[in-house]
Image (cartoon, rainbow, N blue to C red):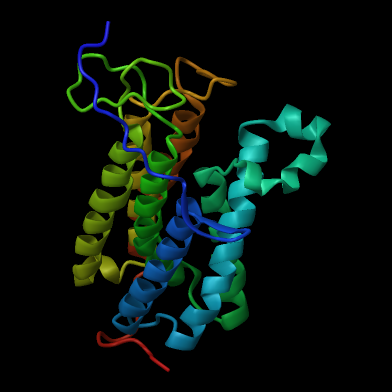
Amino acid sequence: MLTFALPFPAIDPIAIELGPLAIRWYALAYLTGLLGGWWYLRFLARRTPGGPNDVQVDDFLVWATLGVVLGGRLGYVLFYKPSYYLANPLDILKVWQGGMAFHGGVLGVLVAIYLFSRLRKLSFLRLGDLVCAVVPIGLFFGRIANFINGELWGRPAPDVPWAFVFPHGGDVPRHPSQLYEAVLEGLVLFVVLHLLWRVTALRERQGFIAGAFLAGYGISRFIVEFFREPDDFLGTVAAGMTMGQLLSLPMILVGAALMIASGRFRSTEPNGGGRAA
């Protein structure tokens, strides 16, 4: 019996339609996240000794985009449906059918940071700090798009006043877990990382902000997974944990280790504004 339920907002997943051209909210979320991240990365880099200059930030945007898309797609293929895609390898290319994994996107961006920092002779840890401080912007808009699309909904919550009946989630009210993730992984994590970056002693510890992001995201995702409906084709995978929780554990451990070890990689450059082209 339905106790509480809010009507799901009837928002068309297609934001703009011009003849055969259809632009979806999800695409706009990616675009907004990338452009917002690009602007904020410039802002941080100009104020961080040893950071990339404006031209390098502009160039890295392309690398980051490829890292997110390729890593996110391959991560979904390997982490969530390896047997299916092994039997149907051509379906890997059908990205329009959905299927992106954030943990895979993280690995893709890490590879992009490593290759770009080697090519441009930048500090891998310093660039990683700056990029990780920016990521929550994209996470926020991405989770809002998930909510608009009515996907990745939460577990049944018939007694929760803010529960929604999602169009494809049956007739039971569910947690709006996408909004929980937007708040925790997006807004809260963004504010925490920005406040940490403002502390000079922490900003000088190369790798600290990156470690804080990895641990912070891992903890946020682990918590939200208790309210998010597990993937129907996976369910729980080990010790009652979902795949999202299982993949978040190494992020928490690596993040904590990086924060501790960052004291060995202090910046030796003088305080002051970073380089800008």
